Length: 127
Image (cartoon, rainbow, N blue to C red; front, side, top):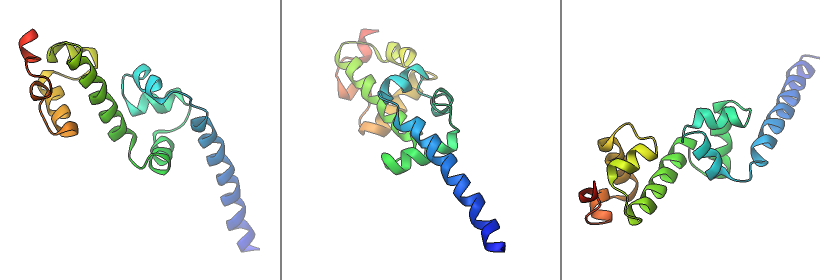
């Protein structure tokens, strides 16, 4: 009798988790979702109608890293493309929503191991 009480809520909880995960599985373009959410995992979760915790669990299970780490890499990957296209670091920082130029350079170096100006020489000189 006590065992039934313990098991039944667990089964119900599993169904709820599966329903939330289903919402995340249906996302076709994670990069667009991240961009639309200004690269903020909390906003990504809201757009998917799930909690941040559920988004984190989904990412760890499917991708093997946190949503924040994935978003950081995605933003820096997009920044690298903009650097190669000739954008200045200040313009990239503003475009991708970094707090400031220094924050962008720090994040970029953390992801790629080199500063933006070393990634594309002359990038800082353009403006």
